[in-house]
Image 1 (cartoon, one colour):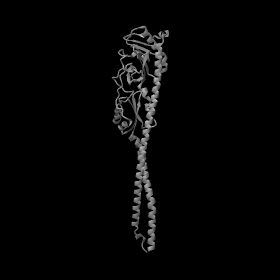
Image 2 (cartoon, rainbow, N blue to C red):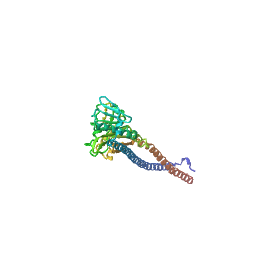
Image 3 (cartoon, helix red, strand yellow):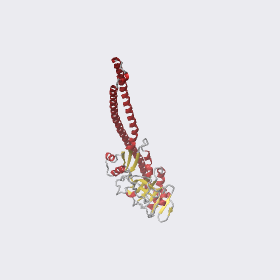
Image 4 (cartoon, rainbow, N blue to C red):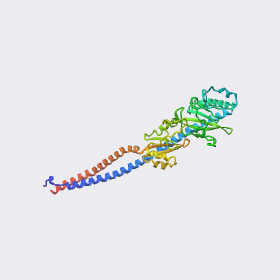
Length: 381
């Protein structure tokens, strides 16, 4: 009988090993192709979903802000109507609200609800009545407005200012030009013949030491232009809720830009800013976002703006009333970094499946070949 230890079965085993290796490589290649296709699709799907999400978030913010601005406009219009009605009234009550005059280089007075400032005007009866009427109007309107606006001014063509809070009138510089400033000039009959509500550009108020924006409404009485009402809001208050945009995602970031593509920052320091100095902020620090900002004045389409910042998912939404733009964006690299762990798990699973399938082929085939070899040796002996 032949010695079993001397019988060589390496040829058969080698053939099984090669077949098993071929199976392993085939399964692995197919798995890698499927994994790559699936992860690529998953990546594309995530980017698409995130783009839709930030578009929807930006649109909702724009609607919310526009609704808030409309409410402010409605309150401002009602206040302007109170002023016009009071100016048209003729009764003795108007003369009971005169405030004590603080004399000096200019005329200044205050009462509980408002202050008066003028560099000097003729002390005529009609003018005294107009000044008294504005004081009465401020008594009626300010309890309704003080929670909504940081200040309310009437810049009169007769060269005086009625304002609340009253302290503004005590601290305004005597050089302040009542009729020759951007708030007044923006809604004069020449600049605004349609008598529409206008919003000012952001400007600096050195009394309150803050950047502000104002609703500007012309005041007419029987088609005679009397002046301008300015309802001011702090820029900080308008931008306060922007930090909550898209709170559902930690990847969301946003900036607000003016019509020239400059970043609006309520806390920006400008040592050269004086009363009613217009805001002149910087462009975005990121080069790609700076290109997006530079494209805004050119009225580029949303797709064109997105192409300028390939490293980001961006959504640019206009705020028409203010002529501002909200830029909501996410960094692609950070967004896709969370897919790295998922891809590693998918790759590990693919290798494990290939190995298990190979064992399923290799063990039965190798066992069968071994049994056949022993049978051949035994029967041949």
